[in-house]
Amino acid sequence: MRIREVIPISELRKRQAEVLTALEKGPAILTQHGKGAAVLLSLDAYNQLLEELEDLQDAMDAFEARHAPGERVSLDTYLSKRGSRASTAARS
Image 1 (cartoon, rainbow, N blue to C red):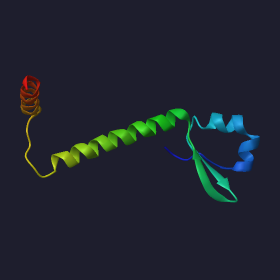
Image 2 (cartoon, rainbow, N blue to C red):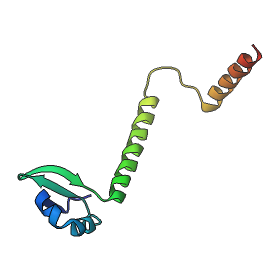
Image 3 (cartoon, rainbow, N blue to C red):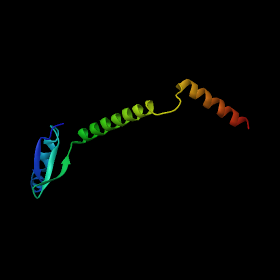
Image 4 (cartoon, rainbow, N blue to C red):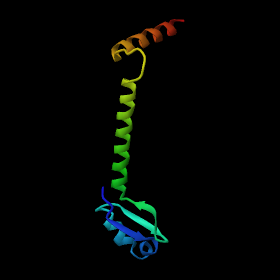
């Protein structure tokens, strides 16, 4: 995702429709008093960015879980132990 345009906020007020159309090609930086103030993204680009961030977080969580100290058990073993505990608790 490349920044396509740098737009002063004063220009944004004048060119709203044009800027929104241009966001389909990529994000833009808004400036205020000559300094970067914000980034504008299309809604699709924002949602894609969120999905990628969630995927990266899931990958990091999986990596950390694999490398965490402690005993590892298969999912089937875990579920069978959990199921037998639930059955025992229900009988009590």
